[in-house]
Image (cartoon, rainbow, N blue to C red; front, side, top):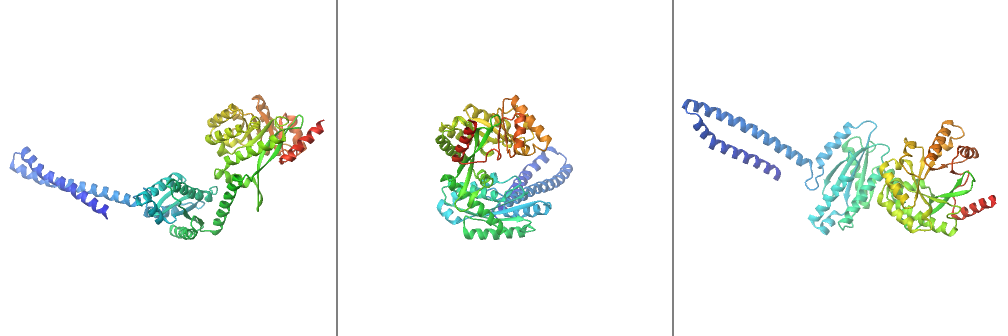
Length: 499
């Protein structure tokens, strides 16, 4: 209402000023410029018509501009600068009407728990600043194409189209983590609830979808600090995943994760000459949890750095006590996730941590998948150079799966490549796989790069790799991942056989 009155007063004031100036100076101009009385009468008539036309155009422009400003103001939230609820509903309706048959949409409502207490704790001005910071965070964090709005004082909403590769659970969790981080920065012990609805499963139009999201939010608000999908099965899945992340954090903090070692064999002597360290998690009640399950969780929640350090510490302790570093183990391979590898700060921290374990550090070899190095070739070259300068060697895992595998060898100064198991598996029956492996070995040797074949499962595969001149191999045919006690015995048996 105040904005409407101000706009009207502004238009009236501009009109009054223009009319006053016209009346004061137009008559003087006619008197000075026109001498004939008849012409003056005619000029006064045309002057009046000109005044009507000019003022009509001016008023039209002013009203149109004011209306546009009012429309824009009604589409924006004054405090946060986000879209208003009316704009949100219109855009959601339009998006659903234009959505393609194979497309999906996720709608989320975020509500701050006990916002009244936040107002009382911070005061209204600081509480408003908190909401502004939240709005900025949400705008920065959501996916491209997302539409974010402030629906009410303490309630935000967003929607975005997604495909089958989109991790809805992680997307929603990231928004809750973002809220928690911002609340801590403002000195608040505050929580939020999120209700989620999916199109077309939870509604065929905007109204139905919003009702579903509201229903899910109401259920979440009864629990506080909760995420609720309209589809209960998705909520259960999200809760199970969340619980597993909490248990993984505890397992890392309490050093409950263990390590095993898969031998790598010299293909000339078939003796163990290196190992790959692998992490394992045996849950107290759930039993063995596959790395294929918990490693992606660790990557999504920033836990890979802590796991890498845990693996280094355990390997240093066990291998150091076993007395097998250097002879026969010439190197110890450590897997690093793509996210950790591409984070310069985390790699620096890991490198420093490795060098703190002086007995192990001279033998460490970092393994990273080929696709991770292809993310940013220039950055990868810099990271690898820094590792090698510090005395840590470098290996590319799953080599051959990228489109530029052979070409990248000239750019990356790697110490080792591991031929992907998919090529080794086809080695006996597919001439093209054999040709590819032969080419990889030949080119790697020309660059003085060590070659390891992984996934060796038959004697025939081993024989072919030996004929092709591959340096090392690992796989279940030669040796499965094993704890330190079995590794020591395995190496001892090899030594007795050689003697």
